[in-house]
Amino acid sequence: MTTPCIICVAITGSVPTKADNPAVPTSVSEQIESTHEAFEAGATIMHAHVRNEDETPSSDPEKFAQLKEGIEKHCPGMIIQFSTGGRSGAGKTRGGMLPLGPDMASLSVGSNNFPTRVYENPPDLVAWLASEMKAHDIKPEIEAFDLSHIFRAAAMHQAGEIAETPYVQFVMGVKNAMPVDREVFDFYIHTVKRLFGEDTLWCAAGIGPNQIVLNDWAISAGGHARTGLEDNIRLDRNTLAPSNAALVKRAVEICEKHERPVATWQQAREMLGLRKVA
Image (cartoon, rainbow, N blue to C red; front, top):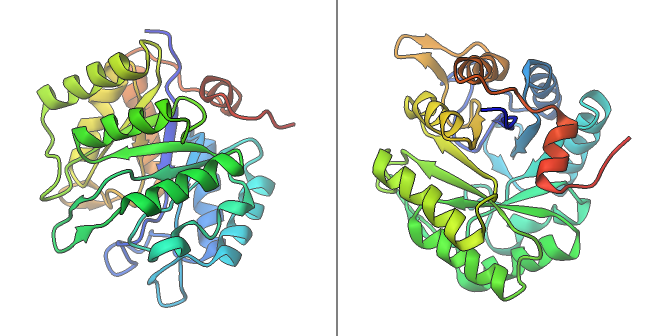
């Protein structure tokens, strides 16, 4: 298989703290340094959250602006993807950073259960976030926690709410949401290709110990992979991951096992239809 694999690194998230793993980068400066290491290891997309000084989640556009500036300086060409997820804010605060014009942004188009809460994505908020992404020429990455989310994304695309074919990411392994199931995974791929076209790009993310499982499934099936400390803080049951770069290197090794080249940032931008940079 010769299609280059795009590796996304989710560096921080909203949940893990330094008490869980000291390598979790929570300040903007730590996030820039950690992303740079992951970029050099082979990641071409960075999925960004920001934190307050006490490590709690934030939606502060100023922090996102500082992070974006640092990544553009130290990781030239890397694809910057902002999270609009519901853990870091409420209502339209979740999209307050979109006018900064990142290359991509995550978009959850439906609600579902998380272990201790409902992950709410009301239709009016989803429509507003999608309109902001369209207005600022930001490519959405659909975070599909359920099969219905893929169908909803297709309906939004057909209605023109999403301008270009979205990049769909299957999220599997969140407790109370979609479990890690190979038949479901294969049906997700079939559904994306049926609804969006045979050549549509897709990605997969596994939570916790399922990260390496989904990395292997996605890479071997011709999709693209997400890794990073947001989703998983360990290399194995007994070993904390020393960095985001270490998890990226593991994904690169899986690419080598399946004889897939790792996409350069130039290739990733071209494949995703993103604007070119110098």
